[in-house]
Image (cartoon, rainbow over all chains, first blue to last red):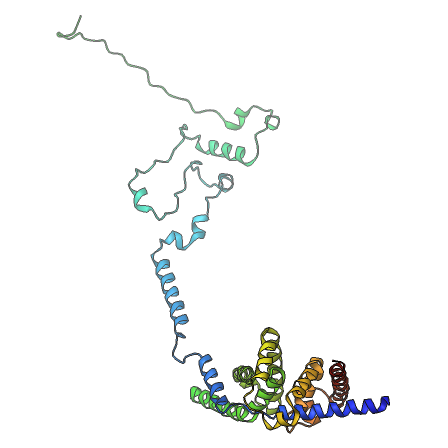
Length: 188
Length: 181
């Protein structure tokens, strides 16, 4: 009984498959291919569209960058030169061959606002008032102090005057006084 | 010279695609129809799949590869369309009820029976249903189905056997439901 039912069901399944075969013997409409071609054509990008815009923009940006670079002052073009700072006085003092004023300012690199600074008066370098012949000693002293912190314990016990030598005599010209001659029209 | 080569290469690809279009459009349409059972929807899905195939025409020059790719894409697109379309069931009912004239197949099977067959097919899993639909398309033997799906012939036979059993079970259940009413 069950076998019969199963056979009936399987034959029904086969009939269903035959029916499915008949259902799927459909064909697309006659304009199917034309519609596919239309769909493809709609998606195809235009041959002479905006393809040139990217290289043109890149060229324009490059040109602007070159113009800006050319118009910038030399100091801005070579920023490393502006970053350079004058060597510390201590290093300079080590190899100092001749007496040079330690506080002499190094000229600053030119800035973009050059016309404004040009109108200002030039600042004279500050020079310490040192007796002639003492400039070298002063420079050495300043350099040694800058190289290491000042410590009173490390000061030489001997008389520093021996190291420094005799100070040069200061010659002061004698004052000359002249007696006042009263004018005739003076107030009494 | 290079552009001429390029143009001639494109022309060759376009010619090849035109051949594939003539050769495989019915396949794509029938696969979609096997899922959607709506002519308009099936054509739309098949056209979309073929348009996508055109974009990949350079990598799909081999006929078998092209057809297998087309079946896969069409099948998935049809399933997506069907899942997304919540009004499909209502349209189906209306379409069956409003059919103006019966085809020869409708007369032979009968409308109710036709609906039952489709319901039984729909009850199959996607894996089995694809095998059933491809096998039901004219001219497809086990070897062709195996090529299109990318499995062995033994797998196709095995799945077809399981599908037949499940169809039988579903149809028997439907028949018993009708007799108890």
